[in-house]
Image (cartoon, rainbow, N blue to C red; front, side, top):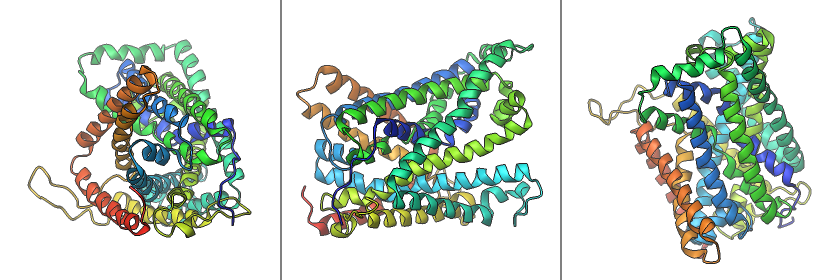
Length: 478
């Protein structure tokens, strides 16, 4: 067994990882959510996308400065360890390995399965499902769950058998998913401007009717965009496998972020050129695709969504496979000698990858039982009070994202305190802006999810407590 990962990825692959991991299913549906939150106010929606992108960008700029100074095994864990300390770095790595990466990977596997079935049943309406598509078979049916597990295993297999192939798959799916987004942006804007009804101008004029909305819809819309922008931090997990990482990783983060922001804003405007805001709020972007490209190409959107989700899932699985290895490389966590092994043929930390797949399966089961099947939704805690809620039911695709924003805060603070060799912009201004953006995300989560935060924090505390036992057992340093 080798004990080091090879530097096999270049700048273009890293950029594709940033773009491919961020652009998943969210871009296709958050446009509808943003319109709903702003009640069809297009300029306000564009502002929300810009603010959400700006928050992502300032966080990226802050971590880009760290990437130029710290380089070890796993970017975010390296930065936490170097700025706050070894113990904090361990807890960040444990959280990423056991909660953050597997929850998102499982959800993306389900989305990939769901929209594969949506595409199949749209092309062949008579396709047999145990639960008919009209009754939710594409969402909660056994075929969807089986396909979800199949996609998880495929993502693991691709990363396990050939990490280089996984990188090429990431590059390919990134290019593929940009095709419908680019077409919708360009053709939608042109069609909206040239249409007899002047659709684009009419949709922007809707802003006059909603000019007195105030700031609350904007905050809610920014909160919605934040989840569409998430995922870029996982690119730092290939820090040890990226050629000239101190130069290429910051470039990949910044270039990738710029591509994502421009794509999102252009797509949002393009969609408004294909249908009225009222239709888009009710039916989503599929109607705009159908109006502009016709029924056949409009239906192909579902296939592109499935491919988009697969690309994002692949990037997330790549991070899952390296989670426990990032801890083991520091002689921390459970059985460092076992999870620190790197296969000499595939150059993958195989044991770390296996436990990562297991975490994905566990969280996938929770996601299905709590959020999809509603297995225990008949149970109600604190009934008749303001805290009435279903015990231990929370969205595992959103709350872990907000948790990582909260974990950024000590890193930014310590960076400002310790980086005496940096200029004022990189030492104080950018981290301060990143802190404000992170605090906003935490505030939006508290307001938006209510008591679900309470149930999630219990699970989070238990998982982190288990991690602390392994930390003590490993005899890791403070």
